[in-house]
Amino acid sequence: MSLTVVGSIAFDSVRTPFGERERMLGGSAVHFALSARLFTDVHVVGPVGDDFSQEHIELLSERGIDVSGIERVPGGETFVWRGHYEYDLNVAHTDETRLNVFGEFEPKLSDASRSAETLFLANIQPDLQRRVRGQCEGARLAALDSMNLWIETARDSLVAAIGEVDCLILNDAEVRQLTEEANLARAAAAAMEMGPRVIVAKQGEYGSAMFTEDGFFALPGFPLEDVRDPTGAGDSFAGGFLGYLDGQGVIGPGGAGEVDHQTLRLAMAHGTVLASFNVEDFGTERIARLGRDEIDQRLRELQAMTAFG
Amino acid sequence: MSLTVVGSIAFDSVRTPFGERERMLGGSAVHFALSARLFTDVHVVGPVGDDFSQEHIELLSERGIDVSGIERVPGGETFVWRGHYEYDLNVAHTDETRLNVFGEFEPKLSDASRSAETLFLANIQPDLQRRVRGQCEGARLAALDSMNLWIETARDSLVAAIGEVDCLILNDAEVRQLTEEANLARAAAAAMEMGPRVIVAKQGEYGSAMFTEDGFFALPGFPLEDVRDPTGAGDSFAGGFLGYLDGQGVIGPGGAGEVDHQTLRLAMAHGTVLASFNVEDFGTERIARLGRDEIDQRLRELQAMTAFG
Image 1 (tube, one colour):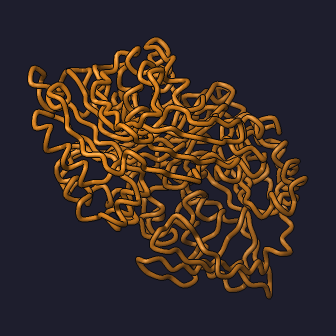
Image 2 (cartoon, one colour):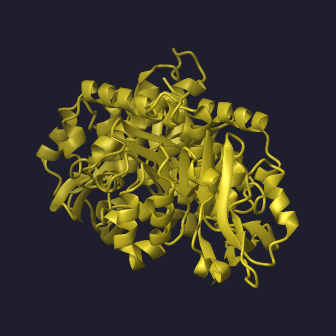
């Protein structure tokens, strides 16, 4: 089994009430890959500039991530995001976004990346997502994230992109905005009409909800007294969710075919746990040093926190 | 076992995108009692005016609620609340509040009300809550709700009132505001330092979270495609939660003593289910016609929606 992620590779500068970091390794593809690699083989695809060092590459490759799809653009600069969080960490304020090499990015996937059984289209321009989707005909499970910007400026493209994936992973406010339905259950049903058979609504500290034709499932966020930096939590969630699914081997050509609802629930739990580790420290610091034993321990705790009757 | 609730008895005028109602029976004590009566004997205490009809009294008494603590103030008018909800039902807009007879209310509890094993101090001025608490020395489990107004205008009284109860039931934003802690886990720990051993944070459509010394528990809101009027959801939750606990008979003098964590979790599930029925129709309409079989059915569904592994 293997998993390809296409998305941003970035330098993040972040300020929270608990500290400040300049030009940390970040971006949706990076946060996703560092989570997913704990469960399966990951190919990461995205552009970087001359300022992206060997050290950054090694942070990924030393953790078993296939970095051959990271395309270095000569004379270019890596994508930059600068933001801050107030005392209430639930709201991110973006202070600066510079697309840099990402503005001209035209993905050409390697054979290995194209043949992955699972594909994650992280939050990038939806026409770009469609072109990547078109190159990955072998993918048995394709998932997509997006954001309010594309709902507002490229809605038709986004709806077409959503129609080409099996699973939509969005913030719950974005599911509502996309479908113009204030009620989340109705919004999820409307999103399913666009094509995907699995809708995952991320709800920040409140956790996440999943809608499928088999029904509804929800998990709270893992309660933490120390949250240092929420950046990348959503992508870490997606990495845990899809990484676990791909690692289970049920979705590839040699697998058992359809993903059952119980496996999807366990994938939600893995996503929840990975997101919770991600926010415990700045950038990728916590997930980069994370091991399977810590994940399994927290999974058991999450299960104990949600069982009743 | 029996349960006393002290709180508002009101006429609510509500407008939502799904309709409009004038002067419905409402108020925190009413919503609470109509939920709790499905599990145990309930005494409701609060003032009404001359405009409160026999028909309103009977809506409660015909459902087994002890209405002898409803005090009619000659020449007075019943508490009035008028509000509306926008397309997004998560935010209530208050258009009018007239305390009327509630402004002068000084509760004098009957022997039956005083001797209840469980006491719910619904959202009223905290000094009033303390005077009621003082009259109910026999209560083995006392719980309290409040609101941002009292945190802002009567904080010392509120903290003293909280120090005299076993269980605090607040919206999560209010737990944060009360303790000046942005992180909910830390806020709950700080609230527990004030005295209560159980903190329940209501989270609207996201569900609810419970903090005790035994740990954390959370449930999502029950997913509904048709929500008509959210008014009273929090009090219906509290009624299901405390009504179930009292009905289990574990907290009274003849019971097994301490409430265990598993029973508290089941109480959270009952609260969740009662809140979900409450919002399906205007005012008390849905809960007034609710039966135990519907509750048990939805409880099983909630359990199926939250189990994994």
